[in-house]
Image (cartoon, rainbow, N blue to C red; front, side, top):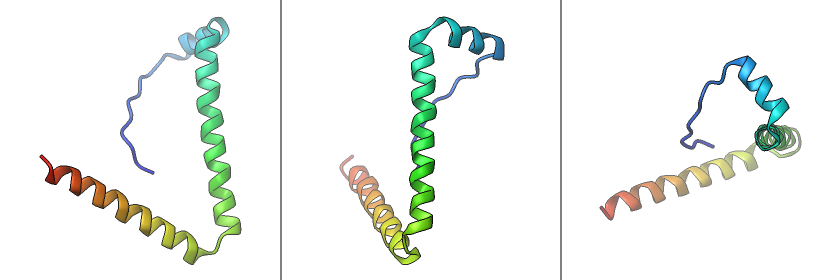
Amino acid sequence: MEQEAQAILIPCGLFNRMMGESSEFRYRVLASYGKRLDDLMMLVEEVAFRRMDQRLEEWLTQRRLRFNRHYSSRAGR
């Protein structure tokens, strides 16, 4: 899934210090890692247990819906 994102670079020392000192920062980092791991496990499950034609049909349907939403929103400008 593609979506816009913003990123910042944090020096290693500052990152380690913030992980040790800031429970909110630590929570957000670990929650982000958890979400990525969950997404990866879902992908592995999809590839391992769903037929290719089912996955392709779903992907094409989602892509068509995103395409239609994108161009219908631009037409209203």
